[in-house]
Amino acid sequence: MKSNFLKGFSATIPVAISVAAYGLVLGVLAYSKGVTFFELLLMDVVTFAGSAQFLMVELWKDPLPITEMLFAVFAINLRYLLIGASLTPLFKGSSIFEKAALMHLVADENWAVTLSRLKKEKISPYFLFGGGICLVIFWLISTLAGHAFGFMISDPYSVALDFVIIIIFTALVASFYDGKDSILPWVVAAIFSYLSFLFIPGKWYIVIGGLSGAIVYSIEKHFRGDKHG
Amino acid sequence: MDNFDMLAIIIIILAGIITYSLRFGGLLVGNMLSKHKFVENLIKALPGTLLLSFIVPSIISEGIPGGISALVAGIIAKKTNNVLIALVIGMAIIIIFRNIL
Image 1 (cartoon, rainbow over the protein chains, first blue to last red):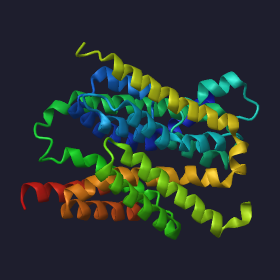
Image 2 (cartoon, chains in turn green, purple; image 1 turned 90 degrees about the vertical axis):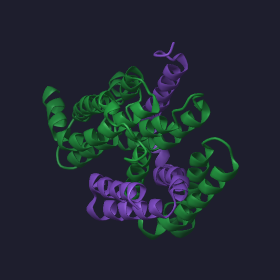
Image 3 (cartoon, chains in turn orange, yellow; image 1 turned 60 degrees about the vertical axis):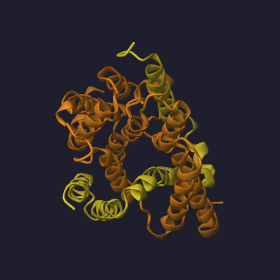
């Protein structure tokens, strides 16, 4: 048990270091958007999901756009359903309490590290949990450090702080590119997003564009590779 | 009240509950999901299309520099698999446009 925890912890350190780089950026952004130190800390521990936290911070303004924010968090984190489902073999034989306790600290990074290790050797869910603890430590230190030193950036516009998130998301989008199958859904998502941005108040363009593109992807897959029924 | 905004705290906690339910729920429903190919594909495509929908209006608003920066960053990220390099170069392009050109 204990050794699985430590193995998972140490195997996750390399990814955790690159996660910490985003954490630093998130902390600085959060500071510039007026998210308090405590709110960021709470977000880190309670939500513990990078892209969702970036979205929340980005949408953060005086009357908080509650519905848009929660919708966006739900939609961006829907993939955790699949991530959770893919962990079924790892949790075989675990009690429901164990499952409930260990699932909170599942992020893309320790999930990926765990599944690739699971192909090679027999590991327990504590490997995953060790990775999660490793990530949460790096995440807390880096985001809170970014927040604490955020005041050093005096002119956010000229250093293009408002564009940091756009570039990070662009890079992440590129990593989701899945060959030709992605083209049509992405074009549809971009068009719907921009049209909603122009004509629908609030931040709904994120959800509208995202859903329309994803639906196109499903339909496309349905008519192409129909083997799975 | 300035430092302790109750609504903000509630939203953060709700976001946490939503995220946790998805994590735990995925493990509980497990194999049921893979039977519905349509839903599975939908969920698979969502992160990419959502993030794309998020960035498109900002890139268009930023004009040509935004387009160049995003395109270069995207290509670099895809080729090198390194988001940080993409970030540094993409930011450099925007900063040069805003401050020098």
